[in-house]
Image (cartoon, rainbow, N blue to C red; front, top):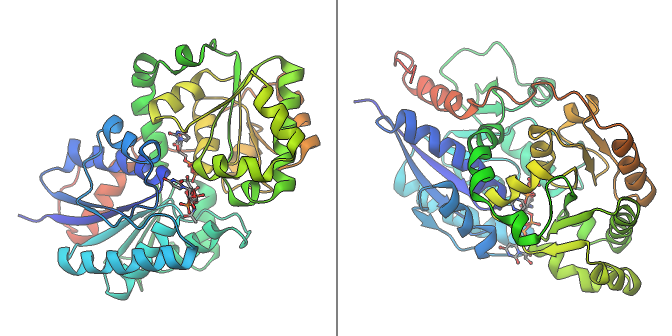
Length: 391
Ligand code: UD1
Ligand code: UDP
């Protein structure tokens, strides 16, 4: 019987979460024809940045863990390439499946394309047009050696067409004849799937002793925010000002990168004010169900995370973006998010604006919650054009 073997690369927190959606679709609809081999690069390794998601989201255990850990970009990526190449030569998959734009994504793309394993890129086409971001380099390079490119939004699709990918390609698709699809977002699949579970299983609000709607959720982890003291201080000053204006709590689950840099990069008086302010709840990273519960119940979300921006939109929460641009420009265009950068005045102003006039429109931008199933079908059809893949 015809069947497909894929190698999935995960490494960073958001990739583990995204991979849950495709693994679930395979388990539920394609278990008889798709075999998934999961490779964890070990880019994220703390219990609350990795292990917690496997338990909670029912993701199969990784078949391999490269345990690369943290290192400079070149060292980290090189270790991953070496490990992934060995596994690909051993497993001989039909595809390598890559998510997003991390160093694990780039390593998978380089390792696979050099030994002619077709690359499937999920979350293709996103662009910040800011090449000082490591992620922008990773995603462009990955897209341009991919065979099947799955863009989650119309903007992602249009970016790829503008970069020279043709719309009228005929199968079979290869690295030299790549195919671009607009298919919706696997993170939206996940949010729909886990929303009810989070509402019933998470006790994070009780643990933090905060009421529904009585807090703002924030996350900060981009290197240009954590590593540049001017930006980090401006963000924390703005958060403290919003607490004093609103009287609300701000819940801030700290990415380990941020946690490690607070003491050295915050000015002493900002650090003192942040630690003394009881309504600023600096907590360790939370599990996905806890995060979804927080997103569901927050009155607003302030973040530099790509994934959290989207989840704010899924749960219809106004979002202040702590970056100078976003790949998810649709959410800004419809008025659900404001780009405030790490600018004290702009962040406080955005809070005032949303507090007075919360957005009312959240149109359907991220698909129908079935992106993962669509991706599975397209992978199968490219290998077996005559297969009935209505599963
Ligand atoms: C990476 C991705 C980024 C993504 C983010 C998701 C790259 C270039 N960046 O950024 O696109 O948005 O993951 O969270 O791939 N650390 C720990 N424990 C861990 C993991 C990291 O302590 O389990 C600390 C280490 O000090 C490490 C630092 O965080 O040096 C940064 O980790 P790294 O994976 O290099 O980048 P992220 O900032 O997490
Ligand atoms: N997330 C989580 N716990 C946290 C912070 C984030 O489960 O404490 C989830 C969040 O819901 C989203 C994903 O992690 O699904 C986003 O990852 P992150 O912000 O690390 O990276 P990015 O999306 O910016 O690449």
